[in-house]
Image (cartoon, rainbow, N blue to C red; front, side, top):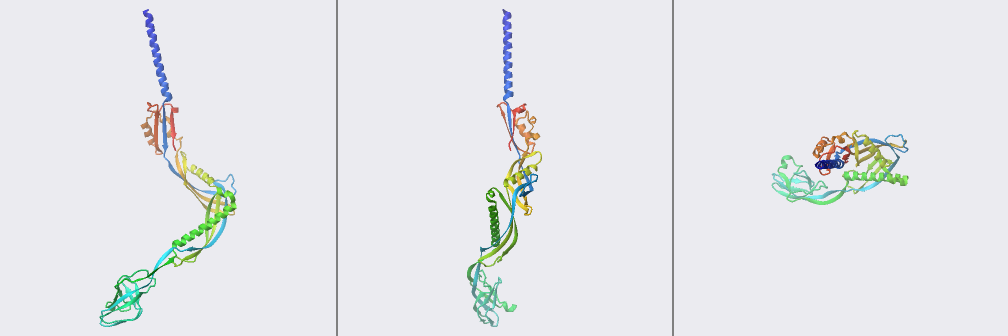
Length: 377
């Protein structure tokens, strides 16, 4: 009987041990089955750009490199147009006043009409009539500005009389005691900006008309196409010059306008491919910068119906996902801080974020399929 109880105790221990081992195995299976690490890496974006010459042809062949299909057109436009001046000049006419002629010499002095009187600022006035200034005396005389367009007031000042010899000028001179003023008036004046703005405006009008004519020739399909233009000045004349006092002026302009029309999306696709090919082998294009997509006609040939287009495109590039720094084997067993430290070694990485689950996991699992690595571009 005692022997049976001993066997029963042994069996119970075996069962308990088996259950314990089973629980441990189940927990281990759960641990390795559900633990995972999610690592989100944000690569640093680098500027990329490309410049190349594309060809636009009326009849594109499949073998043509850097070529898109389009049409070329040339026309000559001319016009004469009147423009208004915007500048204003203030004129002061009939600047007059009264000067007291003082004679400190021992002899009288006669001054004829239109005798010159010069201010200390070198503004020239003339007397209106004949005067005789007695020795040791003084006489008032009306004067007027020699420059009928003088545009300033003249404050009280001293006048010399250039017609007298230099020693006598020290003894016979003039003095004004009140401000001289004239009647002010405004006159229109043509400025440099007026002429430049008028020329640009007329050129824009002529080129716009040429584009509209070409659109009419193309019909409805012009709505989906882009126009690039090159303009050559054939003749330009203006019937005025800067500072002329005129209310208006005329400009004559003759231009040769070369137009190339094509599908902008096709040119952008070509430029994007060129940008991709310009990148190093370990980089890929992240995005393009549309406001840095620029193009202009370099040259064109009506005879061959071909045009050369200068193209510029910018974008950003990032490291490729197959780069060796993203090898999961290098991340196994690392903690959050160690992951940050690892990626901090590479200038091409902007930042990294890591999360583990379940909550008790604090290292990257050994199983690579439990590592979720996301490259956020």
